[in-house]
Image 1 (cartoon, rainbow, N blue to C red):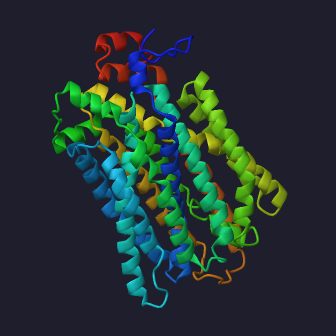
Image 2: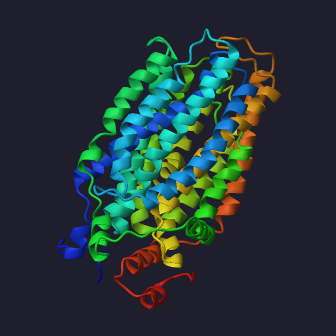
Length: 474
């Protein structure tokens, strides 16, 4: 029946075996994601850390914006470098090995700013360290997402890899969302906590460097007799210009980030609305099981339904819960906890599926242009992801200044601050969610058609055969 259909007698064709990914590789892939996302989760506390050491919210926003100027430059640069540079030992694996050292070093530097130095020195340190962290994260983010396209062309194997990776992201969320607020003060503060978590995370990132195999690249090199394709800057710009679904999928959260002013207010809400910093941990604990349920649901639902439809419907559910949460308020802790727990279900689905679509966009881009732009495609993903984070950080800290936030750990806020914090946080999330859903209506790729594109890109069927079987026209 074809390359990607599992036979009823559980036997696989030679091509299927070539594209099979071992269990050890999948676990290693998941562990890398867990370590990487602990680092990413730590950056989610950057605003709180900066204001705790005395940097004003307005200056934090400026630091974030300055850093993202560099981010706007380095992601396309590294994407092009990764497409042009071809190591003998793989396309993405060498970069992952470098990242195991680069990302923990950069993270520790960012969270060890001496509190006694002058304000200008703090700002310079914060800016340079954040730029270094951003560069190091690019070295790990682009390759770990891109490597699924070089490990296998089988859609089911790719979904399996990505699902395992995103499942481990949930575990990373437990570490940064629950463990960190509980142990930070007990371990002696930000610096000690970040050093401990960085070392543990670096260890988790090592196995994939030892066990992963880039089968697709090996096959391409054999077929091309060792020749490597070289592209100009114009080719790469054209690839992105024609990849409308990549742009649509990542434009949606970009718009949302402009409106979701409370995206980085987790600890602030816990401190000023819920009674204390540790409340963030207790509330997060109630979300663990629903999030895992949502993750399992995502995997099972995608076996029967197109993954984009599953993703979109879960987003609608999350938006409705956000509206109910806003109307209910934060005074009744029981209601607050129940609503947050229910929110874990669409969160789990989103965690599993959010980055499943970039490999699809890559196949679409190659199908439309004939160019194998893995580096550029996944650099676009990491660029938009970090840009979203930067915008969310800048907007949220500017919004803090507008509602009268006073910086400094333990500082008493003005009367009425908690209500303003809650209202801005909820309304921003709701409006941003509505805009995201409207934009995603224009995304038309589906699993069936992408699988045909992948087979065509790999030379297994002709373009005419692929188009004759597709659901949509591209």
